[in-house]
Length: 626
Image (cartoon, rainbow, N blue to C red; front, side, top):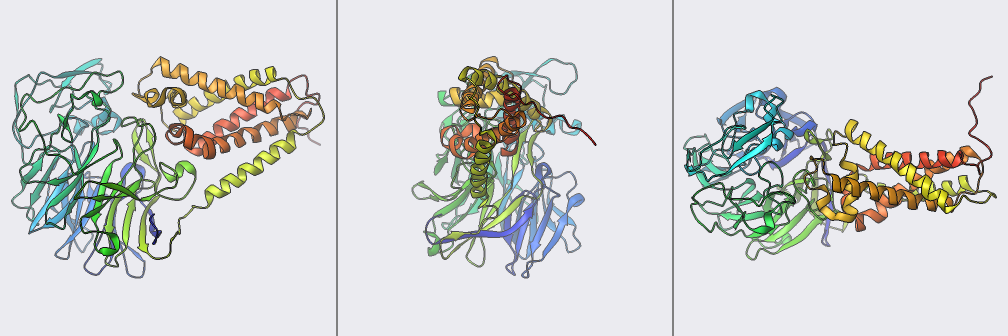
């Protein structure tokens, strides 16, 4: 943070919270999405004494989940959930205001704002790039029989170009390869030049209606996933927009996230422009995939509006708020939460991006960091306290900034999964510099524990006998590396619900960079073999280093010393070497616990081999009774 600010926890133990708002009495309202196993969906009010009151939860939302936004207008609490806008009654019930919005796909109806007796609502797209495909099965909704006819809907009539796509059938219906096209249900093919009818309840748009839900109309369209929505100091409407991902049958790589001042009746380029740049630009070509082409035969304009600012691809620009006073900067300064990337599920990056709050000068587009972890990426990848996935920024009636944070999230074959009730609302306020961050000192504890393990390793392996040869160490380390690799692939499948071949490909990024994990759901030989080679070389070198400290001939001490050695190596790699040198390995592979387990298996195998070697005259003692 800049000097003069402090951060602490306002509320914790939340179920993947998306945003907060404040009612007329200054009480905080929290939209807890309940997404991905994060906990039950609800809207929670924090009373002035700190007690939590649940206004509505669980089954009241029906199948219209997740909960994405909460707002207050004329003393009435509004909640956005999937494709519905409702008000909350005094009896913990929901009263629908706008229904039937397309919010049951990859993205939903997002944030809501009131201005000049209008209610403005940001609506995301059903898919990544207007084509329903295998990635939507990974996200879960395509496998639901009740949702298989869903697809993107334009706001106005459009003409299709000659674009069809082939995909493996993920539904297990024996169809093999399936042909599909844009703006159609999976497996349906449109005809070049055919017209897709528009509808006011469309995707990728900012809609508006009266607060009672009447007079619904399109304000602007052609966005991929407009998320944050605010009225600026000039009375204009501003929105953050998520860019394309490199996934599905029409992957688009390196697409920026953008901030716009939204003009009425504007078309902003989806699905054929990333911000204001056509997807036919070479920068958007994914690794080993074809160059994206236009889906539309005609566009409303060849030059969609330019954004105010562009953010790093996959940074995920989410909710934001303008500076409320001089204490926070100019009125035109917007504080924007960057949720963070999910490499490799959504695309690839050289190093983690996002997981921070940035300040954007909306008059110049200049972006500066405001609130961020000391290490890149989510705090949990470093076993430290701090930001995980900031989703929104709000200023409270007390003048403090409140940052909503989803909590700990992991990518699996079944999509994004959250650890239950790890969400947080952070409070940033003026005052003495400093932080009160839960678990923030745990990184120090981890480093101290690593030093202690190193000392125990040396103590266990001390002795007077000649150490094993370097050749022995190289061979033993190679064998132990193979065992560690097999264990990692087993953990990947059984414990983390990831492809078995994912761990070697993550290690391959040390040589191949981000291309090693491109299209990670597909088995590809080169990065897999490169990853195995990296693991073997690393294991052999660590085995050679192990021989330099082995001077005991007692088998049990070699085994236990090997385990401690493996965990010590993990600590040094995880917290000292990998983050600055190979951040994709440290932060986009296993969670730290499972990396530690993998290296413990390596150390155990190394220790057992050393214990069974001729230089260990005393074998591991047998367990006896009596």
